[in-house]
Length: 439
Image 1 (cartoon, rainbow, N blue to C red):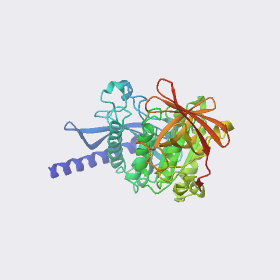
Image 2 (image 1 turned 120 degrees about the horizontal axis):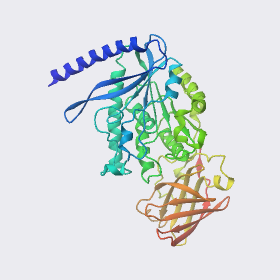
Image 3 (image 1 turned 180 degrees about the horizontal axis):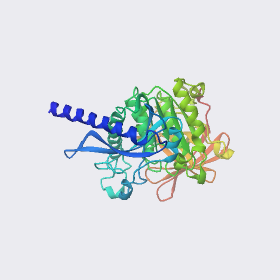
Image 4 (image 1 turned 180 degrees about the vertical axis):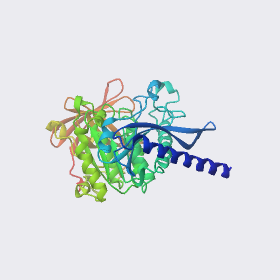
């Protein structure tokens, strides 16, 4: 079996070399031309080898060229099978890199575009329901996607037109999150990472934050600078959620720069189309990685909650807790929610609220409820959920269908009201702003 496997590998390398030679004659003198090829991988499904479609665009010249491998995202909600067969390619990314002497490749993962195999990246048990928001069903799709990317890069890096020592990985949406994760598994293979509006599951899904956190944390072993580019008004990932993902990534050792841009027509998820928005940041990043420098701006400290300073020392604070500044566009009454609060409810429950990030949509909030300082916190002691604005009130929707409405009384006090899923008020509390932060 080993001999047969080696024979297949050798024959595949020969075929790839011939494809590479063909590629030279077809497009070596034509900038930004697109060519479609099919990569014969070592992947198998149902006893059949898998070919992955890849779209190339190349700069002028003879090469070998530095290579950007740019990964596509999902198909929205995953409920439209006709979208699975659409091949992803974007002129804006191709032109930007081709004009700077880079070759760009857009591999289509299994079951996407004209690639072989089943598209199976985290679906519900009933595939008609689209992507699953359950981590146990969603996250195996990440592993499958990473296998496809690895198979594509292995073949692409063997081409004579490619400088295998200068490979950059990037992507949009799921492709951006996958690029960050891939870099952690192959830290010596890629020179840089470009994450454009990246995330695996929308933060509108209750488990979305925990799923995205798990994906991005796979990349923390990559010890070179990464670039995170996001658009405001993204219908899938709020900027507060995306900034939170970035801060978690950094707090676990990741290195990078984060930008949130205004995007034409207020759809931040389409940021990749607008070079005029991200071009300057990306140019600076390419200069940065070419020098392998880490700028001082990347080392800007993040406000962190000091465990020893918590008024409830029996509450185990999350290791990844990080406070980011609220968006300056927010009214003062909304910006003032950002930070750390503590208090006691009418029913004598101790309550801790940490608002990690805020934007126009709401933000990320973490809270804990306990019976007393002397007793353990209730089961599910720390919960991280999205918050939304209702006027100037910050509202957290609970997993059981209830909600908590936080109202700012003044700069130092918040009133909070608990409502059950029927809208009946079941508790009320007052929280005091704490200065328990260390820099």
